[in-house]
Image (tube, rainbow, N blue to C red; front, side):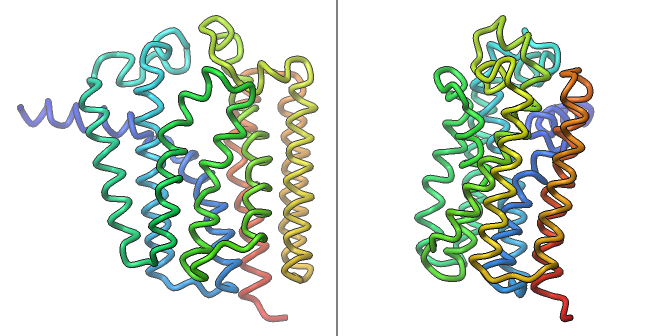
Length: 291
């Protein structure tokens, strides 16, 4: 293999893992950071933060590879995904499976310095990441399953400190599930016409003409659950300001998606990085700034 061919192959792997599109990493990372700051009262050790951040990047990358492997026969028929490496034949099936396995093994090695409970939780975490792409064949709202997969860093973060998962962690996970349904429905609204043609099931299709209302309901539920979590933890006003900013961001998303224009729905999806960041800022100020 020549240097040019190697460079071309590495570029294909980068696009397959979506490293050129970091929004997925951020949406996966924010709830994990929420949990790390909450369980450590704003003082997570740098090593633990590094393990979870790098692990998030690896598992999101593995999840993207598995997703494209599962959708290899569909992506070529969808405008937004027709140029993905597996759809174009740049990466073969065996290559993709080996890459996903390698990323998963490295991710597991990362958590070895942590406790046994985290190791055990990594098993369902991997199962969720590997099976999500196939839920689009039979679940009416696969985004709910994705919310569990994207939020599983929450119980793992709690387990890293407590060697158990208290019910407050599951409350935070539930908030993330509703948030995920909201933003991934916005994402699905972009591809709705193509998904209908190829028979993929998504929340945008299931909700139908109530899609915008459903998105806003899910945002509202996420805000309510985040507020409940703050009450449980006896947080002060800095945390609630962060949640309030997130609520205002959700209201802004309504102005983008109400017309159902593809470009604006995609813009709303991308803008969810600020929703997650606003909530995280609330945690940081509440737990790290003295008033």
